[in-house]
Image (tube, protein in one colour):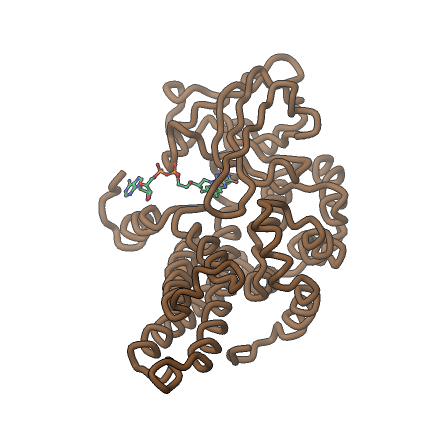
Length: 387
Ligand SMILES: Cc1cc2nc3c(=O)[nH]c(=O)nc-3n(C[C@H](O)[C@H](O)[C@H](O)COP(=O)(O)OP(=O)(O)OC[C@H]3O[C@@H](n4cnc5c(N)ncnc54)[C@H](O)[C@@H]3O)c2cc1C
């Protein structure tokens, strides 16, 4: 394995690597070919407590920081696995932890920590509004002791492998609020009660083996007790959780990037063409070296984002920039890895094409590259808002 600078998280790295070693390339390749869910892998991670890293100890988690959590995600991807199957279980509960009532937290967090309950899904994106979240059309209307939800969501991941979902819906019409970010609320939806009783789930076959769905809400009743925090403040609550999500995704991309660099350096050292290893050619070395440099730089921004988050300092800029740098670097590494495997890069058995598809997603989700650039332009450079 590629040598990287030692850090203080070696114990976590060793333990996660040991677990992941039980799930070799063949396992992930088979699940990908079947478009299946890596149930045994996710169970093993859950039982070992890794997905409960961010849950405080008083609720049965390990109460670790974002830095440690990010190492767990990085190592999963570096091992050849894909955290996308389960990363929601690690960070979606943050919304509940920060904004839920004591009763909600007591009822859910210990059971999420033990894995008895999965909170792997978050329903925000809608087909007609895309990145323009404040214009969502899904509504939740209070009727007595419940809310009635109508509308549609798209690209909502892991619904079939989750018991609970955080749902963002409009509770006050857009034309009745002062600011368009107001008037939205978040709910904890019990998927076991909802599916077939107002919620229809339609899977979206897609390029990656990433379980994701269209959701249709038709008079779905959600108990008013499942409102998280105050009505109307849901958009702010969701935003609060995004910095953790973006930083963890950055770490996953860094794990992917190291995986690509590991594989490609090994391959180009061994593959002999024109009587010498292809890795002896500068035309082969330089793109790999460049991807590695970008990856190391992205890693520094990831640590900065973790440090600020764990110190409860504002970290929106660093989380966005870390995600952008890491997604770009892993994609660069993926391209070099595929290119220098020649035809073999396209063969399933090398796993390069699978990881190539997986890491490509992070240019688009959970936030697209352009939207990160627009954030930096507006919030860091003081340029006029462009959208
Ligand atoms: C596999 C997968 C899993 C996902 N899982 C979830 C999930 O669990 N929950 C959830 O809520 N969502 C999920 N998403 C949705 C994801 O967050 C969105 O796809 C993403 O935010 C982009 O939104 P959009 O697809 O509607 O693209 P659009 O908003 O339609 O944008 C399309 C393109 O136009 C560009 N663009 C749009 N506006 C501007 C602008 N003002 N300036 C410059 N460029 C612009 C974007 O950068 C993008 O490249 C998932 C998506 C995928 C593909």
